[in-house]
Each structure stands twice: as structure tokens, then as C-alpha cells.
Length: 442
Image (tube, rainbow, N blue to C red):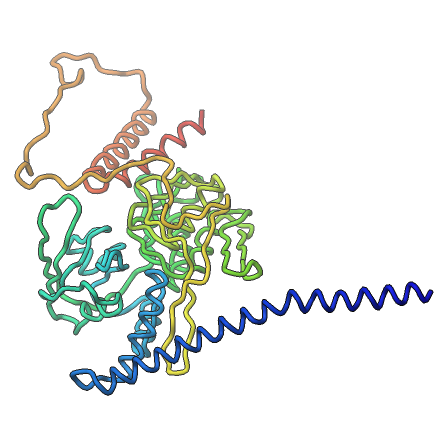
């Protein structure tokens, strides 16, 4: 018994020695790291004092500190930034769905401001700005070297005032100027309509009104059609949708799913990860769905497209999406400002991160460029059919109801064909749903 006790004591002593030997260097390392951080903070204070006392002109100390904070955040990634009290208020107004400006979602790349997407019905969209455009100047002043928030501030101004921005666009050899008139931006989150037998849900943004608007619009179109059984499917148009609120993206995806995962987020610490699943109840009653995306579809749009694609609930058509697979948290500060900090990546149900990769469509469909005005108005070659021939035999094998049905089908096909000139990608999506319906009925 004594031998056991001695062994136990000896073991305890050895354990203490071992712990001390291991913990000692760790504690020393932590102390050294802290010392380095404090030295760097002292260095920051020294530089701040020298700027304040010796810079050639008197400086605004508050602006200097805000610039330092913003520089620290923007060095992390393009989506982390400092928001002053005014900027934080502006952001809250924007997510509510009404604000003043040009109606354009931007990011920063290589020091330049890059267009993510123009928003429907805004000065930016009406002026023809495109996803991927670079804005290099505002009213003749270069944006190079400015933070994203500073560049955005230069584009803001009174409603009704004019602004000239310089655009660099891929495929154009020279930069060109675009003149816009600032306006109050009132975003309609979702526009619903029916093309033939297809419901088209155009989702422009993911604001607080997106899911309620989508639910109401879809319900109205189904009711107008006399029930879901009279429709052949739904086109969910997410093109040029720059994203927005994560919870709205989850609600929209859930609207088309009965079960399964929608999205998961993973932060720096594994315990901070979250997983979001669909709840029972498909608002379409199981109708086929086609999702339209392009290079302007970002963030929340990619969550929806990725979820419906991975769950085999929708066919994704268009071109590769923007590839913003990170989640930003807005953290309030005591000065009524805030910081927007990237805190997680999001993953589609299959476990793929689309950060910098984007969602690849199931079917790639490019949107043709507008026709050359020089050839506008030229008539397409006309072809004659059997029915146009003099003395052609008539077809008396169809009943009146069958003839009427054929006429209605022809009218729907012609309407879709006419839509191709206006929106080729949407017309393709509608044709695809018509084909799926034919296959299903056989």
C-alpha cells in the first residue's frame, strides 16, 4: 500500500514537472506575442502623435482614426469595412428597400470600383451599366487609392443632380463616360408575371420584403391561372441580383423545397457553424423550376441557386455567378458606427464553397448583345409554306376543339419566340419548362 502511495506521489510530482516544462514555453510565447502587440500599438500611437503635430496641414483627428480603422479592416478582404454613424444609417435604410443614389451594387478589385450588378429600374440599369464594369472616375476625379466607402460617397448626392462616371468595360478598347441623374431608389424586391403557362418571378434584391413579395406574387399568379395544374413551371430570375439578407435567401429557397439542407455557414471556430434546413411546404406544389443566373448574381442569390441545384429541385440556366461565398456580420460600435466583418463562409448542401468560383449553370446560355443599330429595321427573309400555295389542300382531319388548341399552342410559341429578341435567356428558360412538361406527359 505504501509502495502504491509513493508511486502515486511520484507520478504526481512527475506530472507537475512535465506540465511545468510544457506550459513554461507556452506562457513565455504568449507573453512575447502580447509584448509584440503592445509594441505595435505603441508604434501606432507614436505615428498618430507625429502626424497630428508635424503634418504640413492641420488634420482632423477623428477622420484620421477612422481611416486607420478602415485600413485595418479593408486589408482583410473586399467586404470588411468600417461604417461611420452616417454610413451605418445608410446601410440600414438600403436593406429596408428605399434609398437615394444610382442603384448599383459595387465591390473593389485591384484598387478599382467594380460593378457587381445594377438594380432593376434604377438610373444605373437605365444607363446600361453591366456586371463586371469598372468605374475609374467620378466627375473626372480618379477613384484609384480610395476606399470603397470613399468611392461610394463620391457617387452619392442630392436627388436630381447629375453625375458623370468613367467606365472601363471588357471588349471596349477605350474608357467611356456615362451621365446619370441621381434618384430616389425604390426597389421592388419581387416582380411576378405569367408568360404563357410559366410564372416568372423576377427577384431583384434580398431585402426585408423579398420573401413576402415572392409569396404574394406567386399566389396571385397561381390564382389567376386557375390553379397550379394549369401552369407548366416557374422561372426564378436571379440575374443581376447582388444579394442581401441571409435569412431572406433561406426563406426563398425554402419556398421551393419540402426538406433537406439549404445552406451551412462555417466560421473560424467549428462551434460557430450553423446549418439551415428546409421546412415542409413547397409553395408551387412541385412545379418544375428553372433558376436564371449570370455574373451579377451574388451572395444570397448564389445561396438560393446552389441550394435548389444541389437538391435537384431546379435546373440552373445562364452564365456563371459572381462567386461571393462569404458572410458578413454587422457589429454595432459605441459611437453609433459599425464594422462589417467577414465572419464565415457559406456552403451549399453538397458541401461546396463557391467563394471565388461561383455557381456553374447546368445549362450555359449566353445573353446575346443588343443588335447593331445600323442593321435595325432590316426585314428577316420570309419563307412560304404549303398553306401559301395556290390550290393547296385543306386539312379537315381536326375537330374545332383540336384546331383551337393548336392555335393557342402556336400563339404561345410565337409569344416566346418574340421574347427571344427582348430576353433570350428568359425565353430559353420558358422553352425548357415547356419541354419538361411534354416529357412528363408522355
